[in-house]
Structures are given as structure tokens and as C-alpha cells.
Image (cartoon, rainbow, N blue to C red):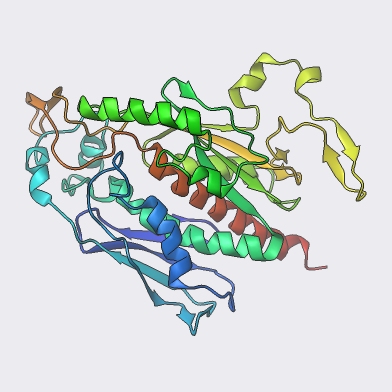
Amino acid sequence: MGNSFGHLFRITTFGESHGGGVGVVIDGCPPRLEISPEEIQFELDRRRPGQSKITTPRKETDTCEIISGVFQGQTLGTPITILVRNQDTRPQDYDDMVQKYRPSHADATYDAKYGIRNYQGGGRSSARETIGRVAAGAIAKKILHQVAGVEILGYVQRIQHLQAAIDPNHVTLEQIESNIVRCPDAAMAAQMLTLVEQVRDEGDSIGGVVECVARQVPKGLGSPVFDKLEADLAKGVMSLPASKGFELGSGFGGTLLKGSEHNDEFYIDDRGETRTRTNRSGGTQGGISNGENIVIRVAFKPTATIRKEQRTVTNTGEETLLSAKGRHDPCVLPRAVPMVEAMVALVLCDHLLRHQGQCRLF
């Protein structure tokens, strides 16, 4: 229950942080799409642990294996299964958490719901679950780009109080990947790096905001009333670990404007297309894509598992102290970038197939 996402392009993720492996089953992928393990691996390498000095030192290659659904480099139209085996597990790091609940983590709520939990690495509540999403997102990205020329780019916009000024209309992958923070503003990225290292050395953690832009999105994606495109985007990215807030376009800042200031006025471009002069709507109107760039922002809290001693309780109802061991990111933002991109791709790909099925028949 709760492990599947999407309608026509549907994924189900599986596995635990310290189990045999994690992965995804993708159902509804169109046949005859050329896809290789290398294309999926590129995205997984952006998500994997141990990639820089400000990520968890857990050493995992996150090498993907395509178990089913692909033959001679092409999708079959049948379920695609992608597996990544866990290798660098240290279950002993979690001995203190057999009974002690980590503050702001899922330990207590998993016990309350299921009456049992995998305390090693957090089990299904671990960010390691997102491997399946990123692998599936790589396929969704290729479908979107091949069919409609869609490009999806995420980047770190803010870490705590340090905020970069980035133009989502012109940012490039090369700029994003030019530093380990994944902030395309090099000067601000350097300040962010210093801050993350300082917080890490204190045994603490820090949060921030990832912004993501989807360019060249076709008009007409999304369905009223309950399947509005922004509603599904919100559900997708808010299902990511540590996510705490969602904005589209002007977001909460738009509440400070009058209607005359906020409205996106229309015009006809040189190709005869209806366009908007501004994009405070963030690429959707009435829950349907309008052909402008879709721009979202996702807030991520500080990592819950930290080395600093904190007050907590045990599963037997006793108050105690916990200084968590294990290997954890002092800031999830750099590794969250490919996760946000993946969820945006999965939503857009699903809605593209749904739009084709309903509105392109006649």
C-alpha cells in the first residue's frame, strides 16, 4: 500500500536501506523506446551517496541491473524491473535505534502504524528508496524529450539563509553540475559549501530549497478537477523524503500582489501561438499546462539523523538521550536535485500519455 505512483506510466518501488537491494517496477512504458543501462546510470550517479565531501560517506556504486522489460536495447511494452543491490551496509550503526526513536524521523510513526519496523537505516523511510524513482525518472525523461523536446533541470536555489538568483529560463545542466552543491551560481555555491561543512563539523544538519524547471512542456497536460497538473506535481515531490513545502510559479510570494500585478497577460508570438508575457502562473492555468515553462520549488528540512545529542524516548515509553551514529548527509539538497527532477518527469510523462489517450483519438 502506498508504494505505487502514476496512472498510465506507473511505478512501484521496492526494497529497504539495508536489505538485499532496492529498485522499481515500471508498468505502462511504451514499447520500442531505445534505452540503455548507461542512460539510467547517469541519473543514479547524480543521486548516489559518497559522491562528494558534503554527502553521506556510504560507499555505494548504485549499479543498476535491468531485470525485465528491455530486449536488445528497446523497451517491450511489458513491465520493466530495475534492481540496485545494496553493498556497503553497516547495520551495527543502528543498534541504539532498536528502541530509541530518532527525533523528527519516521521511527515512532512506523511503529505506531505497523507495530514493527526495520530500524537499520530506516528501512523504507530511508532516502535510499528514491533510487527506484530516479531510475524510472531517467526513462520518463527520455520519453518526454524524444516525443516533445521537454528538458527538466533542477538545482539548489537556497541553503538556509543563502539564496542564489538563478534564471530558470536559461540555466544549463553544465552550470548545475559545475560544483558539488549543484547551485549554478558559482559565488553563492562557494558560500553554501562553507556553511554545509561548518554545520557538518558541528554534528548537525541544514535544509533549503530546490527549484526545478521543465521547458518545452506541451500545452494541455493535466485534468480538472482533482488531477490538476500542479496537484500531481505537488504530490510527487512532497512524497520525497524530507520535503516540507511546495510552490509553483509565484508561489506564496504571489499573495503579496494584486490581480493586476499578478495576471499573466496574453499575446500572439511570431508563430501564431498564444503565449503569456510573464509566467507568474508557473506554466499551468486551471490545472492544465499552458506551454510556458513549469517552475516549481520544493523545501527540504534539515536531515533528521544527526550526531548531536538530543532528548527522545524509547519504544517502551522511557525518556532517554540519543546521539545517532551512521552515515548521513549534513544537507540533502545536492542529492535531492535528481530526485525532484525524477518526480517531475514521472508526473509529466504520465500526463502526456493520459492526454494522448483522451484527446488525440479523433
